[in-house]
Image 1 (tube, helix red, strand yellow):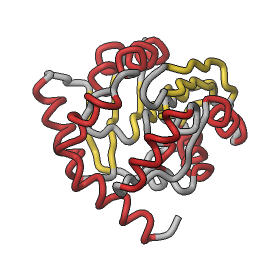
Image 2 (cartoon, helix red, strand yellow; image 1 turned 135 degrees about the vertical axis):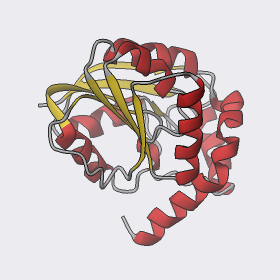
Image 3 (cartoon, rainbow, N blue to C red; image 1 turned 90 degrees about the vertical axis):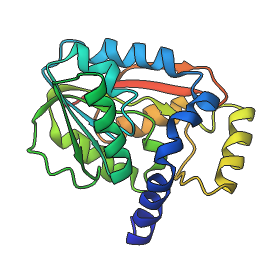
Length: 210
Protein backbone atom coordinates (compact mmCIF):
# COMPACT_ATOMS: atom_id res chain seq x y z
CA UNK A 1 0.00 0.00 0.00
CA UNK A 2 1.38 3.41 -0.94
CA UNK A 3 1.64 6.33 1.46
CA UNK A 4 -0.72 8.21 -0.87
CA UNK A 5 -3.42 5.54 -0.58
CA UNK A 6 -3.09 5.43 3.20
CA UNK A 7 -3.25 9.21 3.52
CA UNK A 8 -6.26 9.44 1.19
CA UNK A 9 -8.19 6.86 3.18
CA UNK A 10 -7.35 8.47 6.50
CA UNK A 11 -8.40 11.92 5.26
CA UNK A 12 -11.73 10.51 4.07
CA UNK A 13 -12.58 9.05 7.48
CA UNK A 14 -11.35 12.12 9.34
CA UNK A 15 -13.79 14.19 7.27
CA UNK A 16 -16.71 11.77 7.47
CA UNK A 17 -16.45 10.58 11.09
CA UNK A 18 -19.16 12.92 12.34
CA UNK A 19 -21.56 11.68 9.63
CA UNK A 20 -20.77 7.99 9.91
CA UNK A 21 -23.63 7.02 12.23
CA UNK A 22 -26.12 8.90 10.02
CA UNK A 23 -24.92 6.91 6.99
CA UNK A 24 -26.00 3.76 8.78
CA UNK A 25 -29.61 4.85 8.34
CA UNK A 26 -29.14 4.05 4.65
CA UNK A 27 -26.70 1.13 4.72
CA UNK A 28 -27.38 -0.20 8.22
CA UNK A 29 -30.15 -2.65 7.37
CA UNK A 30 -27.93 -5.69 8.07
CA UNK A 31 -26.63 -4.14 11.31
CA UNK A 32 -28.94 -5.73 13.96
CA UNK A 33 -28.28 -9.27 12.72
CA UNK A 34 -24.58 -8.52 12.28
CA UNK A 35 -24.25 -7.29 15.87
CA UNK A 36 -26.12 -10.34 17.13
CA UNK A 37 -23.73 -12.69 15.30
CA UNK A 38 -20.59 -10.82 16.37
CA UNK A 39 -21.65 -10.99 20.03
CA UNK A 40 -22.36 -14.72 19.67
CA UNK A 41 -18.92 -15.42 18.25
CA UNK A 42 -16.90 -13.54 20.89
CA UNK A 43 -19.03 -14.28 23.94
CA UNK A 44 -16.83 -15.45 26.82
CA UNK A 45 -13.54 -14.41 25.19
CA UNK A 46 -11.03 -12.95 27.61
CA UNK A 47 -9.10 -10.40 25.54
CA UNK A 48 -10.53 -9.01 22.29
CA UNK A 49 -9.02 -6.67 19.72
CA UNK A 50 -11.34 -4.62 17.55
CA UNK A 51 -9.81 -2.92 14.52
CA UNK A 52 -11.50 -0.12 12.59
CA UNK A 53 -13.87 0.34 15.51
CA UNK A 54 -15.07 3.66 14.10
CA UNK A 55 -17.63 5.33 16.34
CA UNK A 56 -18.10 2.23 18.50
CA UNK A 57 -21.27 0.68 17.10
CA UNK A 58 -19.80 -2.83 17.30
CA UNK A 59 -17.77 -2.05 20.44
CA UNK A 60 -20.91 -1.53 22.50
CA UNK A 61 -22.25 -4.92 21.36
CA UNK A 62 -19.18 -6.94 22.27
CA UNK A 63 -17.91 -5.24 25.44
CA UNK A 64 -20.68 -6.62 27.70
CA UNK A 65 -19.96 -10.24 26.75
CA UNK A 66 -16.13 -10.37 26.92
CA UNK A 67 -13.39 -9.74 29.46
CA UNK A 68 -11.78 -6.71 27.83
CA UNK A 69 -11.64 -4.92 24.48
CA UNK A 70 -8.86 -2.92 22.86
CA UNK A 71 -10.80 -0.87 20.32
CA UNK A 72 -8.71 0.77 17.60
CA UNK A 73 -9.09 3.02 14.59
CA UNK A 74 -6.53 4.88 12.48
CA UNK A 75 -8.57 8.09 12.15
CA UNK A 76 -8.20 10.43 15.11
CA UNK A 77 -11.71 11.82 14.63
CA UNK A 78 -13.16 8.31 14.83
CA UNK A 79 -11.21 7.53 18.00
CA UNK A 80 -12.53 10.68 19.68
CA UNK A 81 -16.13 9.67 18.90
CA UNK A 82 -15.37 6.11 19.98
CA UNK A 83 -14.09 7.32 23.36
CA UNK A 84 -17.19 9.49 23.80
CA UNK A 85 -19.50 6.53 23.17
CA UNK A 86 -17.54 4.19 25.44
CA UNK A 87 -17.59 6.78 28.22
CA UNK A 88 -21.31 7.55 27.75
CA UNK A 89 -22.17 3.84 27.89
CA UNK A 90 -20.01 3.25 30.97
CA UNK A 91 -17.90 0.53 29.32
CA UNK A 92 -15.06 0.26 31.80
CA UNK A 93 -13.47 -2.76 30.09
CA UNK A 94 -12.73 -0.94 26.81
CA UNK A 95 -9.44 0.77 25.95
CA UNK A 96 -9.59 3.07 22.90
CA UNK A 97 -6.36 3.64 20.97
CA UNK A 98 -5.31 5.00 17.58
CA UNK A 99 -3.73 2.24 15.51
CA UNK A 100 -3.26 1.26 11.88
CA UNK A 101 -4.22 -2.30 10.99
CA UNK A 102 -0.85 -2.75 9.24
CA UNK A 103 1.08 -1.56 12.31
CA UNK A 104 -0.89 -2.63 15.36
CA UNK A 105 2.04 -2.55 17.77
CA UNK A 106 0.54 -5.44 19.76
CA UNK A 107 2.47 -8.46 21.08
CA UNK A 108 2.10 -11.63 19.02
CA UNK A 109 -0.58 -14.09 20.13
CA UNK A 110 -2.05 -11.69 22.67
CA UNK A 111 -5.79 -11.88 21.88
CA UNK A 112 -8.46 -14.55 22.07
CA UNK A 113 -10.54 -12.89 19.35
CA UNK A 114 -10.16 -10.17 16.73
CA UNK A 115 -13.16 -8.31 15.32
CA UNK A 116 -12.76 -6.42 12.04
CA UNK A 117 -16.21 -5.25 11.04
CA UNK A 118 -16.86 -3.59 7.68
CA UNK A 119 -13.25 -2.73 6.92
CA UNK A 120 -11.68 -5.45 4.77
CA UNK A 121 -13.21 -4.01 1.58
CA UNK A 122 -11.37 -0.75 2.30
CA UNK A 123 -7.87 -2.21 2.62
CA UNK A 124 -5.54 -1.97 -0.41
CA UNK A 125 -3.23 -4.72 0.91
CA UNK A 126 -5.73 -7.28 2.16
CA UNK A 127 -3.23 -10.11 2.59
CA UNK A 128 -0.88 -8.01 4.74
CA UNK A 129 -3.77 -6.88 6.93
CA UNK A 130 -5.08 -10.42 7.46
CA UNK A 131 -1.59 -11.65 8.30
CA UNK A 132 -1.23 -8.83 10.85
CA UNK A 133 -4.51 -9.86 12.46
CA UNK A 134 -3.52 -13.53 12.47
CA UNK A 135 -0.24 -12.64 14.17
CA UNK A 136 -1.92 -11.14 17.23
CA UNK A 137 -4.38 -14.03 17.64
CA UNK A 138 -3.63 -16.93 19.93
CA UNK A 139 -3.73 -20.37 18.29
CA UNK A 140 -7.36 -21.40 18.06
CA UNK A 141 -8.47 -17.77 18.45
CA UNK A 142 -11.42 -16.34 16.55
CA UNK A 143 -11.44 -13.87 13.68
CA UNK A 144 -14.82 -12.22 13.17
CA UNK A 145 -14.99 -10.36 9.86
CA UNK A 146 -18.46 -9.13 8.83
CA UNK A 147 -17.87 -7.19 5.63
CA UNK A 148 -20.01 -5.32 3.12
CA UNK A 149 -20.36 -7.56 0.05
CA UNK A 150 -20.43 -4.91 -2.69
CA UNK A 151 -20.29 -7.49 -5.50
CA UNK A 152 -23.01 -9.83 -4.20
CA UNK A 153 -26.07 -8.50 -6.04
CA UNK A 154 -26.92 -6.29 -8.98
CA UNK A 155 -28.26 -3.63 -6.60
CA UNK A 156 -25.16 -3.71 -4.40
CA UNK A 157 -22.91 -3.33 -7.42
CA UNK A 158 -24.88 -0.28 -8.55
CA UNK A 159 -24.84 1.31 -5.08
CA UNK A 160 -21.12 0.60 -4.82
CA UNK A 161 -20.42 2.41 -8.08
CA UNK A 162 -22.41 5.41 -6.87
CA UNK A 163 -20.44 5.46 -3.61
CA UNK A 164 -17.20 5.26 -5.56
CA UNK A 165 -18.17 8.33 -7.55
CA UNK A 166 -18.49 10.28 -4.28
CA UNK A 167 -14.90 9.47 -3.27
CA UNK A 168 -15.62 6.47 -1.04
CA UNK A 169 -12.23 4.76 -0.59
CA UNK A 170 -13.24 1.19 -1.43
CA UNK A 171 -10.40 -1.09 -2.48
CA UNK A 172 -12.35 -4.19 -3.61
CA UNK A 173 -15.83 -5.60 -4.01
CA UNK A 174 -16.47 -8.88 -2.20
CA UNK A 175 -19.03 -11.60 -2.46
CA UNK A 176 -19.52 -13.87 0.55
CA UNK A 177 -17.65 -16.59 -1.32
CA UNK A 178 -14.68 -14.40 -2.27
CA UNK A 179 -14.36 -13.02 1.25
CA UNK A 180 -14.28 -16.53 2.71
CA UNK A 181 -11.70 -17.59 0.13
CA UNK A 182 -9.41 -14.64 0.87
CA UNK A 183 -9.56 -15.29 4.61
CA UNK A 184 -8.83 -19.00 4.08
CA UNK A 185 -5.90 -18.16 1.81
CA UNK A 186 -3.84 -16.77 4.71
CA UNK A 187 -4.31 -19.84 6.88
CA UNK A 188 -7.58 -19.25 8.75
CA UNK A 189 -10.16 -22.04 8.95
CA UNK A 190 -13.50 -20.51 7.98
CA UNK A 191 -16.21 -22.16 10.03
CA UNK A 192 -19.21 -19.88 9.63
CA UNK A 193 -20.54 -17.80 6.76
CA UNK A 194 -23.88 -16.03 6.53
CA UNK A 195 -25.09 -13.46 4.03
CA UNK A 196 -27.18 -10.76 5.73
CA UNK A 197 -29.53 -9.03 3.24
CA UNK A 198 -29.41 -5.27 2.75
CA UNK A 199 -28.99 -2.53 0.18
CA UNK A 200 -25.39 -3.70 0.29
CA UNK A 201 -25.48 -7.13 2.00
CA UNK A 202 -23.03 -8.01 4.74
CA UNK A 203 -21.06 -11.24 4.43
CA UNK A 204 -20.58 -12.49 7.98
CA UNK A 205 -17.48 -14.70 8.27
CA UNK A 206 -16.06 -16.26 11.42
CA UNK A 207 -12.79 -18.19 11.27
CA UNK A 208 -10.29 -19.91 13.53
CA UNK A 209 -6.60 -19.05 13.68
CA UNK A 210 -4.05 -21.85 13.21
